[in-house]
Image 1 (cartoon, rainbow, N blue to C red):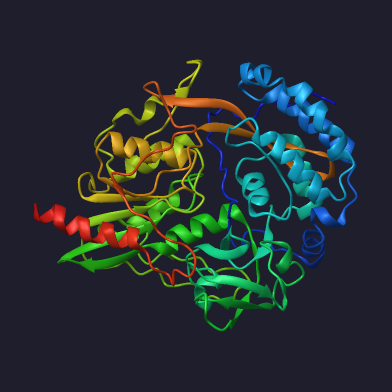
Image 2: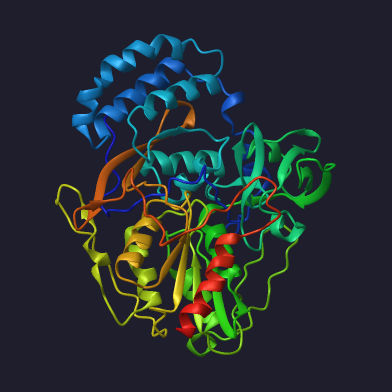
Amino acid sequence: MQRPRLLVQTCALALAVLASGCGGLGTGPAIGAEAQALADSFDSRDRSIDLARLFDAVVETVEASFFDKALLRELDWRRRAAGVRASIITASSTDNAVRRINALIAELKTSHCALLTPDEYQYYAVLDIVGAGVDGVELIARRFWGAGPYYPGIGAFTQLVDGHHFVDGILEGSPAEQAGLNFGDEILTIDGKPYSPVAAFRGKVGTSAMLEIRRRPDAEPQRLAVPVVPIRPVVAFPAATAASARVIERGGLRIGYVHVWSLHESTSLKTALARLEPHNQSKPGSSARTAWSDGGVPAEDGAPIPGPLDSLIVDLRGRVGGRIAVAAQNLDLLDARQRPEWDRWHLADGSGLAQFGSVRPGNPSFRGRSALLVDDHTRSAAEVMAQSYKRNRFGAVLGSTTAGAGVSGALFVMPGDLLLYVAVAKHESNGQPIEGIGVSPDYPVARPLPYAGNADPVLDAALDLLPAQAAR
C-alpha cells in the first residue's frame, strides 16, 4: 500500500466532532436524483468490504502517520494489532469489524483518531471540512456527483445515553428547529422503524419523516413530522451560526447571542455580529438566515436588529472544531484592537508557528462585556479559542470542561470508502497542551440532557452574570 501523505501543513485543528454533527443543508450545486440515489445507498452495512484489506490498511496508515512514534513503540502497535487481527477479519459484519478496529485505535488514548463509516455524522463533516487529498476528491466525485459531501437529515444531532437516543444539538434555522424538536427529546422511531442518525433518513430527501419522540420519561410518545433535506456540512454550520443571532433583554441590558457551530470560517460570525450591531453592517438587509434547501423553511429578510449591544454571548457548544487560524480571526472579531497571545499556538515540537491574518473588522470591542459558553463537545480549534479567550481575559467562560482534543488530524480513504482519521500533530501554547486536559470554565454549570425540555442553565447563568458584572 502506498504511504499516505500528511495533510496538515497549515496547522489546522480539524473537526472531531461530531459524533459529530454537521449540517448544512445542501445548498450549492443542485443535488439531482442520480446523486441522491448514490448517497441513499451509501452505508457500510450494504457493501461487501474485504475486512483483511481494511484492517491492514488501517494499521499501516496509523503506523505511518500517527505523530507519537514513541507511544506506538510503547504500545508495541504492530504486535498488538497482530493479536486482534484474526478476530476482526472474521467479524460477522462490517459494523462489528469497525467497532473492534475502533477499540484498538482507542488504545492510543488520543483524539482525532477513529475509523468512520457513512452511517455517522462525523464522516461527512470531516470529509467536507478537512478533506482527504486526491483520494478524497475522487471519493466525492464518485459518491456525490460533485454536489459535495452531504447526508440526509433534519439538522438535529443525538447522543446515546443508557441505550436511548436524546437530541443534544439542533441547528438554528433547520427543519428540526422549525418543527419544534427540543434539546433533550428522546427519539424513539423514524417512520415506525428504529432511529439511527443517518440511515433512518436515507431515501427520504424531499419528504417528511414522522418522528416518534418522548419528552418526559413517563410521558406518552408524541409524533412530529419533520422535512428531510440534504445536509452539507460546510453550508449548514455557517447558515446556522448566522441564523442564531438574536438579542435578549436581561437586567436592563441588550445582550447579543451567537451560536458558532464551526471554526472552518469566520464569515458567519462576522455576519451575525453585523446583524446585531447594524451600524457596522456592510450590506444592510442581507439575509441572516439561509433557507434550508428542500426543507420548506423560508429565508428571513435578515433585517438588522436595532440598537447597540451592551454585552455579547458566544456559544461554542455542540461538536465545534475547525482551524486555529479561524479561532484567531474570531477573537479579532471580538476585539480587533488588541492582539494578545493567541497567535503563539504551535506544533509541540516547535517546528513551526501558525500564521494568522487579522480580520480587523472595525467592530466595537466586546472585551470585558462578553461571555463564552463551552461543553464537552467543544473541541480542537474551538478549545484554542476558548483557552485564548480565558487566558487573555476577554470575559467569563461558563459551562463544562471542553473535550481535550488538542491535536491536528488528517483524513485517509480506506477500502470500502471508509475514512480513517489520524492525529498527525500535537499543539500547545506557552508550553500548555490541551490534549487530554481541556479548558475548564470559570463558572462550572451543568446542562442535563435527558428530557431537558430545552432548558439551558448555562445560558441562563450567562444572562444573569453579564448584568451583574455591568452593575459592578
